[in-house]
Structures are given as C-alpha cells and as structure tokens.
Length: 476
Image (cartoon, rainbow, N blue to C red; front, side, top):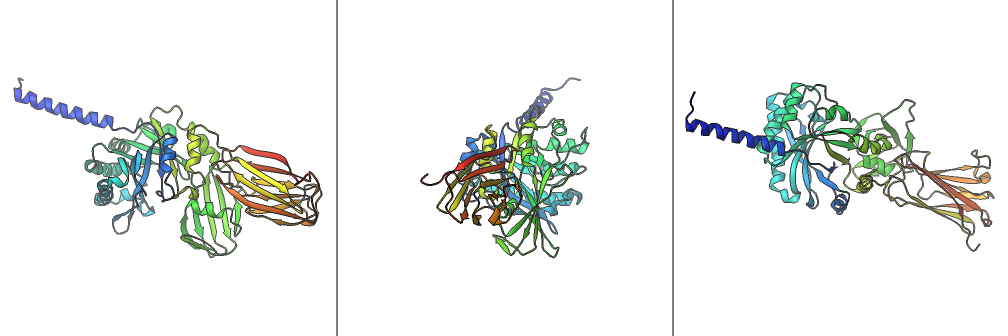
C-alpha cells in the first residue's frame, strides 16, 4: 500500500518521539558512587558533614523530606530541611513511612491515589524550596512492601513519575529477596523506577545481593549499621521503639545495668538489655527504675566486611549507601568520620592511648581513643588493668569507667585489702572518647617501678588491641 508523504511524516515523528523517550529512560540511571543517608537529618552542630563526605569520595546525599502515615487517610509529615544547603553534593529526597503504612498496597486504587497525592505535595514543596536542600537529583521511596505488593507499588510510582521533573531519578528500598524469575508485578515495578537501594546489612535487612543483581536493574547496596531498640516498663508496658542514641548515651551509665545476650546459637546481630537501677532522663525520654531497654545491633565486623564483599563482582551494582542514625556524630556508634576512613581503605581499629602515673600514695589512670573507630559493645572485652604487686590498695575511684574488679596474685577475685591488681571495664569505647581519670589510692608511697598497666580492647572490626607498659614513679 502506497503511503502519502503526510503519513510518512507522521510515522517519522512517532519514531523520533519513541527514540527520545527511550533515550531519556536509558540516560536516567543510578550514577556510580557511594551515598550517605541521614535517616534523621542533620543538626546545627554537623556543619562539617559535607566537607567530610567530599573528602571521603561520597557522591550523593539521601535526606528525609517527609514521613507518610495512615490514619483515616494518608498524610505526610514534613521533615526539617538541612541547616544549610548542600553546596557540592546532589540530594535524594527520601520519603519514609511509619509502621501504619504497612499494607499500604492492599487498600485499593483510591488509597494509592491518596498516597500518591500526599507524597507529591511534600516533594513539590521541597522542589519549590529547592534552595534549602541544594541541587535535588532525585526522590527515594522508603516504603514497606512485600512480595505480592509490586503491582500496586508500580501504579504509585507511575503516578509520581508523571508529576516529577523528567531529569529526576526515582528509586526505592528493597528489603527482601525477590523471587527468581521475577513476577510480572516485580517486572512492572522495576520498569517504573530507575533503581533500587537493596539493604544487605542491618536489622531486618533481608535483600540478597545475588538475587538483586539477577534482576538486571541498577542498584545500590544499602548498609544500616544502627542499633534498634524497644522500651518496656517495669510493669510490662510496651512504650515503643528507641533510637541508637539512647544506647550510645546510656551504655556506659552506671545508673543502668548492662546485660549481654550470650546466645549459644549463631545470630546475625548482638542483643543487649539496659535495666534502669533508678530514674534516668534523656531529652525526650524519662525512664523509671526497672524499665528495660532492649537493643539489637548488627554484628559490626560483619557490616564492615560486607561493605566490600557484597558489591564485589556484581554486574549492576552502582555503589553503596550508608544509613546513619541521629542528627549528629554524638548520636551514633559508627560515625560519618569512621565510615569515611573505612571507605578510604583505612583499618577500623581503636587507637587507645593509656597514661598511668604513680603519685605519693596513688596511681592515676587516663585513657583516650584517638581514632574515630569504636570498640564492640561488651561487658568484659574492653578493659585496662593496673598491677600493683606490693598491694596496699585502700580505695578505687572509677572516674569515667563503668566498673572495676580486683584480683589477687593467683588471679582470683579477692577483697580490696588483699588485691594486687585492679581491672577497669568500659562497655563501649566510642570514637574519640576520653575516659575521665580513675585513681587507685594506696596506704603508702608505691616503690620504684611499682606497677604495670595492661589493656585489651576489641575493635568493632574484630581486631584486638593490646599493650603492656610500666607505670612511671615521679622523681625516680
């Protein structure tokens, strides 16, 4: 059949449009590089965060824009923008959800449309005030979904894509191992987004790196090293979740009893319980005697190992995304500075500087971790011991240490008057932590070369740090 020139022109225009759409879809891929995800945003005190990220070779920032929830309808609670715009790193706006959003994709199309609208209004407001974030490069959806939800999720993404600027990337979190081969719903979901953040390490992270790579979709490997906690009152009332900052602030607090779950079976996380001995208050929290704070923390050495192992040899992985809790370095066990050194290929080892000196009738002990890397959390693994063979100990002042034990010549526990060694324990040696001075009071002046100090710290990487040195005596 002979076609008219006008028909050929129409066909050419359609083909050109299709090619343009195809080219746009192909160029909108996840960039290569690592990103930092600030789960709770940043506080005013973290003014140097971007400088540290640039120095570490970080390529992207993930920053919360809103949290969606469901209560007689969908709503989006906006998150505060950063204290200052990011000047050098593009930003992914993160849409998170509370637990009420679980099952979002089972409520029907009208509910999905309402969720779409709630998310878009929050994103639209952030785009209109984009100068408060810096350069916005995309949107990331951190919404709970499971196998079987993919088709409904794809409809949500398709609706958002039509409203977003065409240059914006659109990604989503994956926290389970997808089926092989992928279902039709999952195929539709993958076609609706530009890539995934597949969580391969962290509490509840179930994504499998091999299965994810087999999807043949660009993805980042997500790492969430933060501890997650729950609060139960002495009467058994569930008071809800607790962030890592509570564990950071209270793990070395003598008003809390630290219990470690020494399970015989192999586990993928460490379990700790803090029991309040008396009333303890933190900003936003007020614990009473008997309250139990139960925490789970990914095994630190596993997370550090998987940072390299889980991305090695993967065809479609584009980089790593590290999720940091809290609004400042003081709220975290693993800090931005510590991870920056790991990404730069430096070892994750505690650098403990111990100083002990004998006085007229005492021995003083100071300790400081001069590295940003923490120890593991343990009631027994991190200690500094002072041997005093002459004995004569009359009092021990723990200073900033959690607790102490005393031993005799045979290394068995004894009373203070018979002790020849004092061991000071620290549950968590944090990055750059300086432990307040401890003091051992003696009945008389110590003899020359009276004592020896030993220490043992187990770094989060699993590497032991040990040392032994004599304690100097003034004037001798």
